[in-house]
Length: 177
Ligand SMILES: [Ca+2]
Image 1 (cartoon, protein in one colour):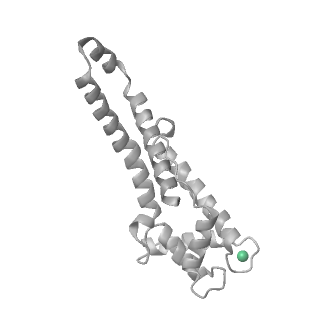
Image 2 (cartoon, rainbow, N blue to C red):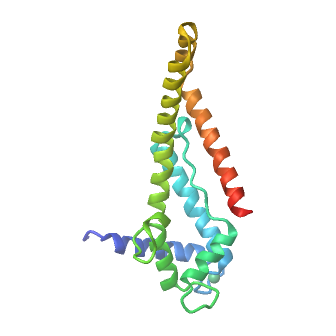
Image 3 (cartoon, rainbow, N blue to C red):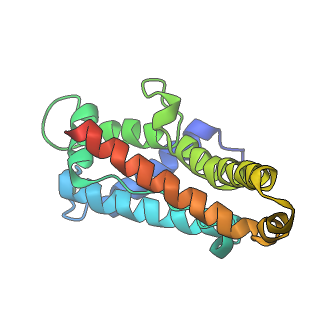
């Protein structure tokens, strides 16, 4: 057995998923079938990402696209505007999701999303927590310094993450208004 190239592997994966997604067996994927299929893919990826990080301490969750976004994805790859994806169109779409498609930017691909999420969890939050702690130690008087030192880093990371989420939400709401 010869080795499969990445694009051959993606094509095999796409074919398998296409058959799984085509619930009514009409040889094309409509928007509902695409939604169900993508949810399954994201569910699998989230399980893998969780396992990779031995999960619970640092959970990573990649949000699956919303229904409106699925409509957008379908439209983008529905080359003949039939409202459904043929296998060729679906293959393009899968290639985009796994980051082997030239048409899509790298930031749209799943590997990038996973990487960005992990980078946030593993680097940005702990670093910010560390910076806050140092600043607090700097400002605190001699007796309170001990107290600040005893604050577990995990608590700070948690707090920083909470602030980040609150900030992001506020930003999104402002963007939507
Ligand atoms: Ca179908």
